[in-house]
Length: 400
Ligand code: HEM
Image (cartoon, rainbow, N blue to C red; front, top):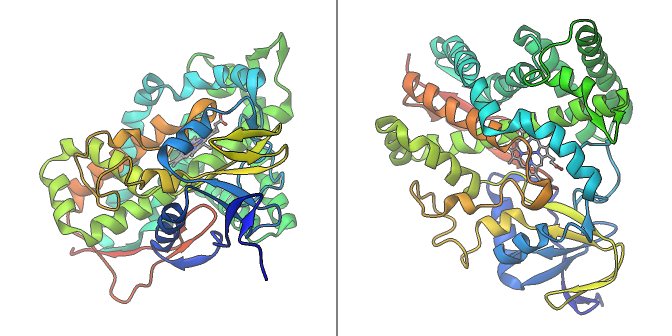
């Protein structure tokens, strides 16, 4: 007979790592949340306590003194690729965030808007005459890759080559092929290193040039090591590209299958800002974050011990009916939609959230001005990869 409780907490076995038909993960998340306030999930070796209601997840993100990113994903509590600033906590984390924040603040992101718009138009104009594309592979990943290079002050013309390496690294990491991942990573680090050499010889303005700023930055009078700078740049790549691709995949699936919502934003593009917020709430692709408990303690009646893994149920919070009315519906002018937790909360809240919002807004504006009607190709079977949700393909068609 199997235990139905773990230290008094009801047990669930739901596996959130598989590939399933699209939207199945949201159904699983909703079902677990409505079963019990807290669950212990035993689908991984270490297991994890699931925080699932909006108010618990929000409070959980504030427990940062005691719940640290020694575990970043409840589903993969192993150390994985080193990441900065994620792997730091407390004071150390704040010091590094202070250096990086200026490049991701709303004003800095606004400076990128003309380039973001221009690059977006170029990519759409390239695709438009074809009348069809795999939106995920031909647009949703290319666009954020180009902007990532622009953010670092590197030539957008390197986008295609860079994308090949980053895709190689992503796919090797997912497939659990460390040697192939390491080879791809080596190419990427060499590319970053060339940019660092160049800026060492020809420094830019540290107020606007991120690479120069990283080279000149001091923490407690010490410069960042080369290794740290490489890790920061690699982190921005890992955190920024796949997420934006996935968000675009879900948004375009929704719009291609809901004419009434697509027509609304085509007719009134001023609604796009609100639509982006509601899409982020409804389709949170980072549907969980992990934390590791640092000392025995109680949280809302849950008895936690040092070393326990906690799941911050972002996907469950964003669709919690206690917080949002009709939570599984897309409501373009939903009051308080921006209170979603798609970007997390507390000190580790997404560094790139303003950039992500800008990217999504620019794409929706420029695409619908040029291709207002499109559909999913007949017979396409859409699937989502668990862990961190993403669509592997989204075949779209339109009239030319
Ligand atoms: C729709 C797109 C995005 C989503 C949904 C998203 C989601 C998230 C979430 C949920 C976290 C918090 C993780 C945690 O608490 O453990 C996070 C952190 C982070 N994100 Fe994003 N993200 C997106 C885009 C981006 C972009 C474009 C960048 C940068 C180019 C970025 C960089 C980061 C970084 C560096 C962190 C770690 C922050 C820290 O630990 O201080 N993200 N993101």
